[in-house]
Length: 306
Length: 306
Image: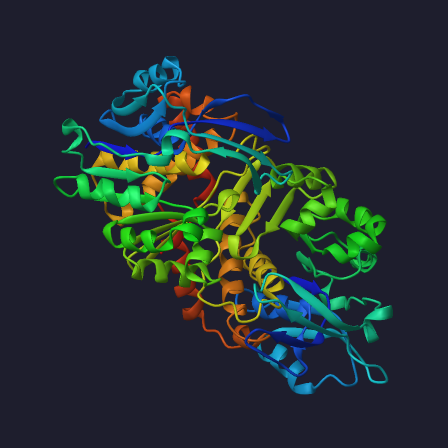
């Protein structure tokens, strides 16, 4: 089934304990669509870049089967830019610089050919934009998933509260779940978020895995223990792209299939952190992914019958 | 197979966001033997208490099948006492008071009837005492497991380094693994600890589960997501008791069986935190444990074949 993703396509400049980069390709929608491309070939993007965005980066998306008809190019403007510096623990980071540029008044226009999309991924961006996208779909997608972050909880909580009732799945990290609900227990936090609208809540815990809350059921997904996290940028988006890409490709939104989707998303995220930016997820084979998913099976299987 | 546990039997006084206690029964060996009692009936204790230790608490151990022949009672002295206060996140705590009392010169005497024990659990105590116990076993147990903590890394690192080569399994939490090895990555930390001696390293991550490193293989065990952690005291010991109790009862030290043992240990720990001190693990039925283990199966099973 077809997937529509909206979100940022951007430049990132990164500094980690392992090195630093100049401007490289980044942005939530970039990671999401690249990751989803390994699962679905109906992979439609709505985003905006400036005239400074290199054609070869768009070509990379196209080579991965991403439909860029909905990618607006504003020749006179500049692309969204974010630079950040990770601390030694790789779990915390400082934003060094943000230039909103074209994102400042992003108007998400949905091409007619995207209107039949059954899976909608609202990448991390302003909640008001996320809501506009939903309103501009002529028929409601089968599944709408939304990613957000603490920044929007601080400056646009009302908007966020208006879009949450419209979506099926929300992803946040553990800190954000606690900020959003003022509950320390992630079980209670998830229950509160479910009351805000989405029946399914995914709480990402980085190296500690992820929790899937679906109606009244819980799944605990492991993360692959890694010797080295080289660059965590985009890992959450890559996770989301693998998750919804797998759902779209199987067109099965049952709890059991969501569990499998989380494993695929986690496997994709485990690749993402191995190199700077999107470099690793640009260069994957189906066999790489199959082997990595097998590692997750071995990592978490134990022989006790229910 | 028979299990021998050494460690503290103590009084604790606790304060958590949910309330506070007077002196209640505590101590590593208390939690370990109570937890193990649900798996093995050959459950032998070596510990020391003072004359102030109530007989009814010893009776509780005996009622759970714990052999207290090796429990020394020093009538003229006082029992080890620890009091602590948990912070709101329940993950960090301050020690309010420690009275070593009888533990100050604990001489672990092993009764002749314990000498055939095949499983030895060295509960958290001074590494020199742990080493003495190993030396006093006339034949080496099939499996020796050691628990330790950051406190001993600060004041008795040399002793710890002397006992680690003598044991098969070590348990530490994530922070302690990092202190012990100066490695942030838990994969690297575990590899370094394995080089110090034990082939099997268990890293406890509290609400994030546990990692089992056995030779070159890894298992990621989930923790049960809880609405409320009432009192974490003794959870790590209860985990260890369930783990080694299960191993002793099955007499199978393979990696596959260790994975099952970790699930049983995690299930026991999930009970422990529900009430103050050892109250919850004193009052469990086989059916409670079976149901809880089923929850772990449901929590972490996903339908992907390797």
